[in-house]
Length: 225
Image 1: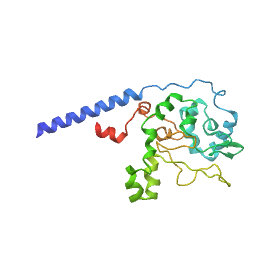
Image 2: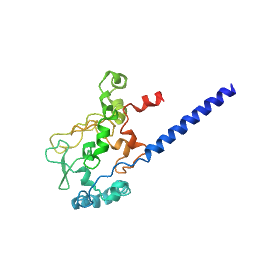
Image 3: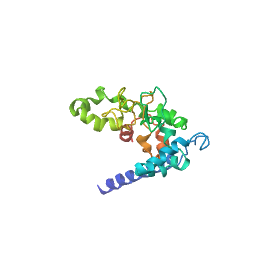
């Protein structure tokens, strides 16, 4: 019995060490940095006005951004949140046309490689489970409240927006906030970069670069291991 326990402990330790080795191996892989110049390709003067205001109005958010790689590189609010006329999620805020939602397609303007990896991954399709027979337990037994608070927060969901009135362009409650990894965005892109990288902190989690390539669900992968 003791011998069997030792073998089991040795096997568990070996598996754990192998897992750590993989994390460090992929975690240190450097993604290609976007080409461009601060103040030219990003870091508009208008965006600096946003930064100055949020520094006073939302200091927590400001300091998260300030200490991030984006903040230290001069990427400001408008570089990510600026919208275009005709976008369903666009609305005027302090004389700037913006969107609350930052989609993978928005991020692809600088991070094209990472976008293409994520766009073709199993993770990007995670929202497709909602409304399917695979999610019968959540949809029927749990009900809408459970789906909104549980399923959609991890898997993502379809974002919906007000199309008229004072709230035109803003997301409807029940579909937002949502950083689910398979979120369906208004520009047709799937996923949310902030599901792994955090909103405004943008930290590259260990192994996050490698995860763009995974084609199987995390839980299935764990059970297979």
